[in-house]
Length: 245
Image (cartoon, rainbow, N blue to C red):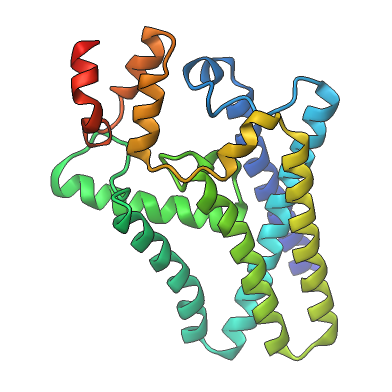
């Protein structure tokens, strides 16, 4: 019983922290002022805001449960299977980033150290999203909106594929219920947030495209200045506009 209690406590604690991070960043007046196109999805009503926080908590919890169960099931078959599934998922993400010219991280670090930092941080953030579903990291300078949503779907796909290999009908049912509830919860979450921010969960823009849009559509010098805080490779396409400003 003790291991089960410990595991449950860890899952709930991690899920709460994940939900709280997303909630606090979006509720921040400073962030909403600096980046109003991204922050502001939480409803103004306290009742609906609490409901949204609960949904974020459920998304993180179910994500962790499905991933943990899948990891255990696959590891019982072979470690190579675990590496193939979870390692392949990370490799796919990095390949997509590189092919889209979106590998460079936003931190202003250049040269070989910048490449190394980009590689390490990209991996760490992706692992965090994979296991906690933290909505904050859907930002275009992190995982990206569409890929964040795709990761939730991928979590369910991994769970549905992994469960039958165990041969336990009860486990199949549990996994199926968890996956279904996760997808329904996500749908309810999208229906309960401010409508104009739903698009941020499916945004396909790269970090460079996002920064260009933020600068060109900024309504204050403070908002424009935020663009200059990131790696200059992410705003070189609008260098002339910045010089003119």
